[in-house]
Length: 457
Image (cartoon, rainbow, N blue to C red; front, side, top):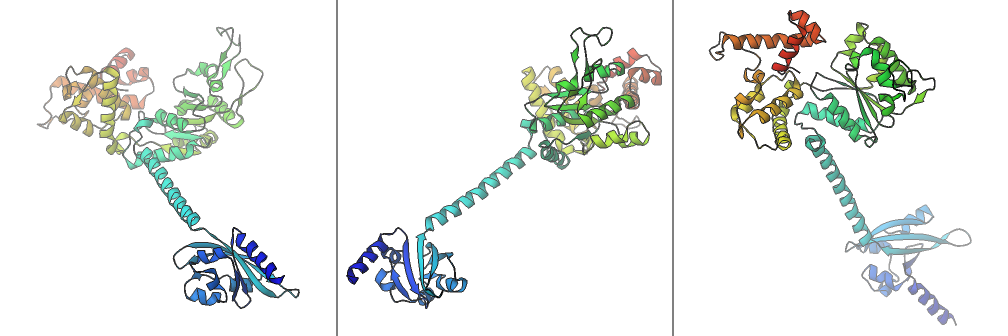
């Protein structure tokens, strides 16, 4: 009867999916299933009576679970390694008598070699995917032609990286920089990278809207709000930006009275249409830009300090083109290709043209460069663009020395160069063509004609 019971126990033991091994408190193996021998590449009966400590010393497996359980006095799981490098997940359970003393240690195991290899493979793949993701992001930052940017310079790459970083959060951004550096382009770049990219991007040129029409254009108006108002009323630019991005260009041109209204809009995200009594709530992301020194304007009481701090949570200054000369050549080639496609004309640049473009001072920044390339592509009657196809200002490099034999110019050419220099300086100093005319002693119409002649933007 006893022998029959033993055989039944053995059959049950061997039928279990897990491989079982039983030791006494001294670590001597007293029971083992047939599968356990296969794991350790020994016959199961050879393990009976062996000490787990000796087997560990012989390298059959390591570590042994018995001493760990004797010390912890509770269930323990470890990963064993066999002499041939298999990974075995072993769980040991103490079996206690009525006095609470450990009499047996039962352990069951799984061969997890394949799982460990798979985990290792997945870890490697995860690292590889992260590496590829990082490289792709770096490539996007280094070559942003597909995003509308061409940039090799460290200064510009720093700006673009910062723009990408802050695009995902609705923080107010103030973009600073000279006229023509690409402030509007950067604002659009941030919008397209943001969660609001599918929503409107509304650009407002604060310097282009007449002062007396600003509120009506900006906030809109109700029907019959004033003489000449549309009978249906009008939706303002702020309302159009709801859900998207509101870009206020030339923010430094706002009057102090309008600055107060903008500040209130930013704080409350509410406004009234002209002639309206019901407040309207809007949800927009705010980006502003200016070529003015707002800190100086604050000191001179021309710009509200509280508004300045509201706008400049994250300020970004785009460097002028002359401070990032590494970008000039790739920009030249990019715009040549762009205008070739636009006008369906194949064009190449003469070496002298490239030299002229690379050494030009670019006071008008990227905007001036775009104008020069487009002018050359359109004007040149042949495939090869030479210096004579460039705007006059570039051919003469905007500066000269009458005493230098290298600058052998006629009197009329010299007068034109001086005239252009004076117009450039006047345009930088005065806001309107009327003021420029008064300062130079010529009519406003003459100013407009000459600005157009010399391609002064």
